[in-house]
Length: 173
Ligand code: ADP
Image 1 (cartoon, rainbow, N blue to C red):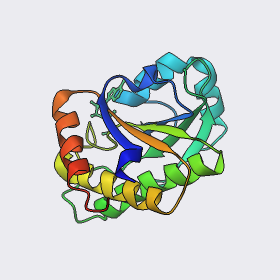
Image 2 (cartoon, helix red, strand yellow):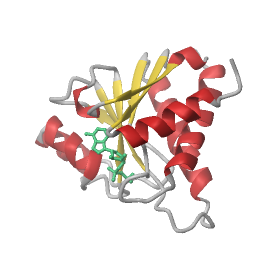
Image 3 (cartoon, protein in one colour):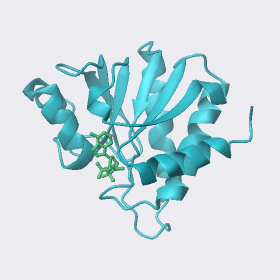
Image 4 (cartoon, rainbow, N blue to C red):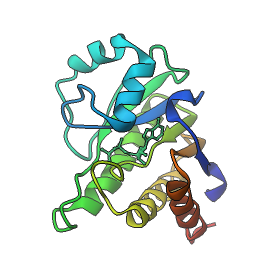
């Protein structure tokens, strides 16, 4: 199952795969960071489809087409804003990864790329977020054949280092 997860450094908007995940906000109407980059690369039709979705709760996910992106779908998930850890942030972050993987499976996606959800302007502690991401993805893959491959696309080296370490620490083979 570990061999179905990889960590790379790169720009998620350039990835050719069935679905990329967007670390969105609850409005689904665009923002900064990876959200802004995805909307810029996908073009205005993405925002038009997002307007029809009427937002999304933290920890849940909604899917759209990818438009001008090389990815067929975009799965939008609002991650939790870090408030110190006492507001269910870890469970909500795990729920983001699970909800995205469930949608990807339902759409028959073989390859899915994730950004580091919540560790940018939402300030979730990086090492903890990486551990939660890898545990949740690993658990899902252990009991589902789809997606076949999950890629964590890290924008910078520090982020890649955290996910590399979290993947190495996954106990299940
Ligand atoms: P959040 O609001 O969930 O914290 P951010 O977009 O602020 O989301 O940051 C999430 C992560 O996405 C950060 O590690 C940030 O460096 C990264 N990121 C920003 N742009 C891109 C991109 N084009 N591809 C992949 N990751 C990106």
